[in-house]
Image (cartoon, rainbow, N blue to C red; front, side, top):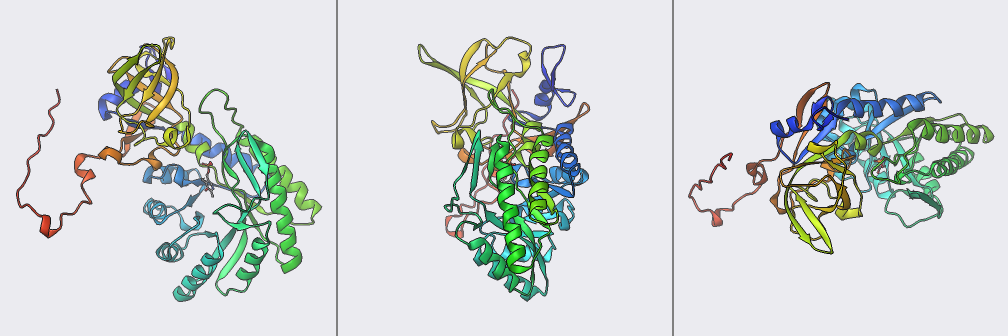
Length: 443
Ligand SMILES: *Cc1c(COP(=O)(O)O)cnc(C)c1O
């Protein structure tokens, strides 16, 4: 990303105003080199310290092109629904590198996963052990699994707590003995092969000690499993959650630092417990897709309330980025057509939806924002498109992949027709007349 001679923002070697002219707004822009570099950074950092596999958490941003890029970079993929699995399979993602997560996988989803031979099902609860065993029995298949453990470490951004917490909807609780009971239950099945353990301690984490602590707890559990069941598990999946830069104050760590924290703790803990070093799996999502994405909007209406604030509104909002409304997430942005100018005016950026909470950014300095300006919001590659909605019957934006001065459409903009695609008029409401709608001239 840079500012070109015209003072415009440029990404992937393209002036964003050219992107706007060709594809319109709102527009998701994914920087291919950035996305790939993030994949490689995690892959190489962990590989340096031992046997490892980095899997991209596709819930962050799932589409065919993203799956193909992840595959090309040699990563695995984690999916949490039939839809994400379908997307991966349609992108020809090798099923043996797919991990299937979720706290309530349906019968149909488990059948789909087993039939398509996904590498691992990460089993979340006792009901699922029974359901999956039953599916495997009926399909005449065995399935490699991990057990999701709730290790009692919970991390958020700058702090983490060791709670021994048992109040989570995810996984087998360590503190009350459920984790060991789950291992015992799986050992008694005929068709499930326990390959290892999984945990995921949170999201947007900057605190390295949180991972080191969780790693220690998980290795203790591996040791206990070996003692009790004579079973030395080969895989340890430490989840995702690696934090990224959204706004000032965020101080993300490098993949190298995460790898070192996890792997050095793992090495010393396994040695102390006379265990073999397991294969380590990590599942970054946000840290791969987040920084590689920006969203472009056109500014429209504005409203100044003297002595209070000035609102400027964009042609998108909570429909394409629900995170500010959902979590109070903060973003940074610039006026892309005056990216070289000092941001001198304090405004708040409103979305277009009929919801007071639809505010994209409170209190941000922008360079004299005017209707028709292009606003570029940074670090929107993760949990934006994937969490988008059609609230107010607003169509989802298009997504383009940019690289070396080339832009390719990877997700089409939803048309009005797309919005009614699944609507059905029952016979008794049918009208018979064909309605002609003004095509919408380009003025
Ligand atoms: C969401 C999630 C991830 C990815 O989290 P990020 O914060 O995007 O890195 C990884 N593993 C599991 C189990 C998750 O639920």
